[in-house]
Length: 287
Image 1 (spheres, rainbow, N blue to C red):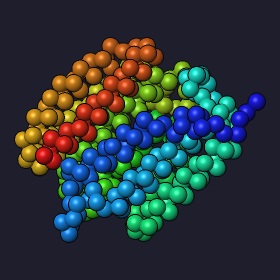
Image 2: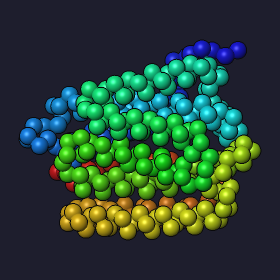
Image 3: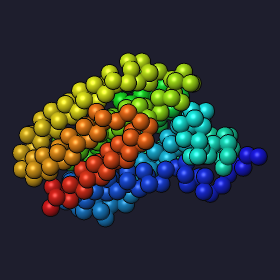
Image 4: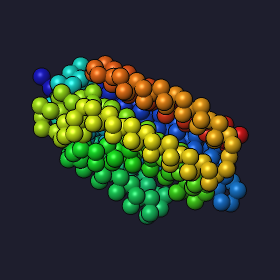
């Protein structure tokens, strides 16, 4: 029998660890890369910063909910033990919570400015579109998630209109790593996706060719990071990204030899760890 709502299921479907990582990354951007607003006041003491972080977290949580809502049949195949839709939370309750979180996020963004509200509205539409259609399309769904992840960092610099190039370097870092991670997840989930008519990259161009796409993205990633860090002329960024590059090369090798579901599951976790390492480097750059 379906339960209308359980707290444990609500927590699981909201991905609290991912939300905490998102909020942590935004705080790191604000504290170490932005530091002060255009008037010289500390952004840490600005209550609008926390309104922006809360709005972003609510929007991300609503995205996780609607994604699980549309993916329930595929998830029963790929990760049956993690399914909460129809078990801990009724489907109509998920839609209600998705709407509540979305409208609350948009309301908070509206208190900041109209341009922020419009930006959040566009992000909310893209999240729904991704879950409903784009996720089952080759590559375009991966790009959508990677773009929204990068935007969640860049929005801090956009709001304060300061150090946008420096924050852009980290947004590019987040974009490419998330793009690679999303494709790795498609490799992991290809069995369930194939049974439900999804047209993800591994199912359209094949297993080996998808790996070649990842390697191509990796080369583009290195080129983009080098270009932006060259413009910034900060030797600490060179050193840090060079060290991180060694870890990244090891990840590419692991992707090359991976061929089982559990391999790609581990790779997804390791990519998250690299993203966390990149976030922590903000303290080095801003010191």
